[in-house]
Length: 234
Image 1 (cartoon, rainbow, N blue to C red):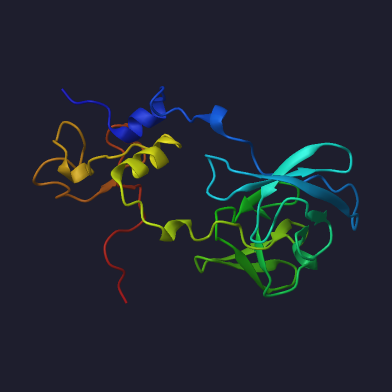
Image 2 (cartoon, rainbow, N blue to C red):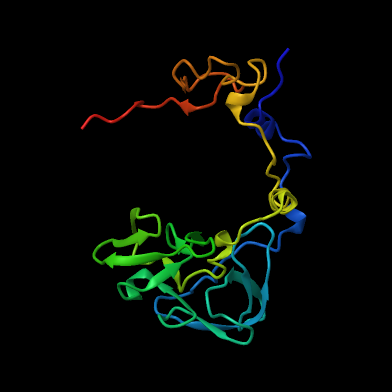
């Protein structure tokens, strides 16, 4: 008798796969600008580590006394002042007000949605064109268009060299994965038995990896409802 594959067990939930949110500091956010062109300032009171994020967070104290977190960029330190609504160093501004070629992070998908893109350490976007939409090129090379009123943080998220340091010891990988409920070590699907995974056994995946969108959870692995497979014809 088979058992639930990992992807299905994770979806079912349980202590093994439940995110340890009690260890996370909080989410990054921007204060709501009340009017067009309005600016505000906040002081960085602390740079903190969040186990759920790759980049450190900067804890800000706003003028009204409230405290929020934003993704810390390279060069930020305690005591610096972050400006909201105007372009400059350590500032959050609308994409329409940021010059082309300036590295940005924490980009909103729609105005007031909060930072969504380029929040990982060392990942940033660059404005390449302006018009009715702002064209931004990501670190991956992908091109996206945004509303000019979307906010973004000027600068590159701190901690960009973290992936260059090798783990060296297996225990370091275990603790790093365990902080975010990622299983490690884990066997590849093709090394399992046929009862444990659809790709298990000596002859699999001998048939196409494409499965129906309406397949049951234990079978839905690989290319789910793919439009095409194989090499693209030139």
